[in-house]
Length: 417
Ligand SMILES: Nc1nc2c(c(=O)[nH]1)N[C@H]1C(S)=C(S)[C@@H](COP(=O)(O)O)O[C@H]1N2
Ligand SMILES: [Mo]
Image (cartoon, rainbow, N blue to C red; front, top):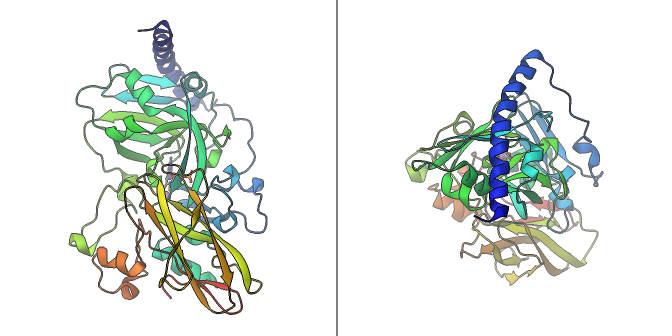
């Protein structure tokens, strides 16, 4: 072992010992109510650069959701204040990074525990990845959107995807230092939010590209996104990326946690009415973000059709656009960079003749997977009539999104119309 590596190991071992001791002290502090308040951080919504259509918020007793205004997006990076946000609790935790610890335990040789500052001493990586809720764009969201009436931006439908440059430590670095026992095959991991949101992850993914992130687009991860530490599980459905990450336990089987069982499984006719417990990668998807429902074209002439494409399985290879309701398709231009498991920006030159038009985009990824129409997608899922079934709740809904441009230039959602 080089002196550099042995220095790192020594640091990790010291961190482990100090961490476990400090962890015990924290518990005592919390019980006596002595935990210090962290310094204030600007509120999520206050930082919006798009006052006209900023974050939209849905608040329920058990749930808070913010939607990214993707109809106004440019490039591929979502500004941190506009990142979508979903929490299965009624409040966003306010964690002090000096007190907060991440513990790694279970089937390991050496349990470890880190503060934010201790993690920052370890080798770091920065990677651009999208995060998408598996409920993004679902039929249920289309009908909610329709109820709100025309002219309402599409962020309620497709705004639960965002893309950031995440900086942190690879989980594999931490797991290697902890030393995995032979039986280890899954992780079960828990957030520091009031509901102790918990998820499970196959070890192979954890050792591949999962990050424990402390920064987002060059600034500390925001409170709503998991400050001080969150998991980033590239390409996989959003719920895996546990925020305010506190405990990672190495285990030898998948767990069906409460967070996984509730809301996160949908019965399907093609599976004989059964549901799949584990859904991993988000499928290939694209959506034209401008023009989109809620926009109004001022008149005939040239328009830059633009949108976002992504795939949880890899990189976007091709995006095609149709402006005649799917009769003909032409390649869109992909803006660089085109990164694996990241939003990719596409553009398409269009001269609108002022007549009613149906515009849509179709993405193919580097695995050869192509987006399907809503009718084809529902057929694959075992439904005979998508219009009858269309508004039923679905997850992983990645159908091609058609927008109808009316003669007056107004743009409407034509997914189920
Ligand atoms: N601790 C915790 N982590 C969580 C959740 C939560 O409720 N609590 N929600 C999950 C879900 S359902 C999604 S889609 C993503 C959203 O990440 P974001 O809020 O940073 O956009 O966080 C996931 N991580
Ligand atoms: Mo989600």
